[in-house]
Length: 154
Image (cartoon, rainbow, N blue to C red; front, top):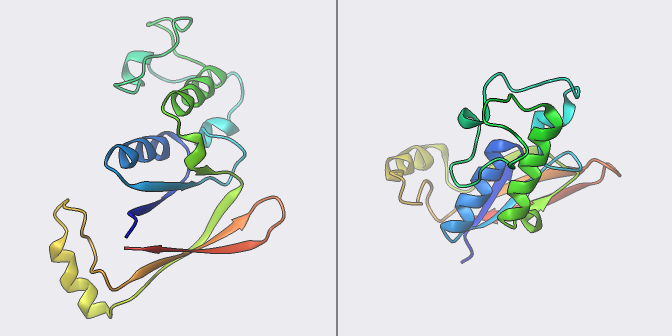
């Protein structure tokens, strides 16, 4: 059975989650409500800057472009460029479904009591739930407002 993972948002955390789930052999799908990556950085003014230098706001496996100096606090456009470059460098774009707003998520499967018992299985071993259930995700297209249901198996 395929190991499908749903990730909500293609901001910093969503991009990292996508990259690392791919490395672990999962098949991620990132639902992003906007037309591009960057999360909240897409909604800031051009004068908004990081409140820290790039050394404290950098992916450990992907440095900032050399045009951004170490002592600088990058502005929103530089930060968006950095996030887009990260997604491009690690080939994450094919896994991102843009203009896709998650409206609801339901776990359909075992009873509440059974589910509580299976939480004891969670230990980072990839088995947080039993194999009985599925995740149902309602996703709205932000362009035409149609809703699509995705079903992901455990």
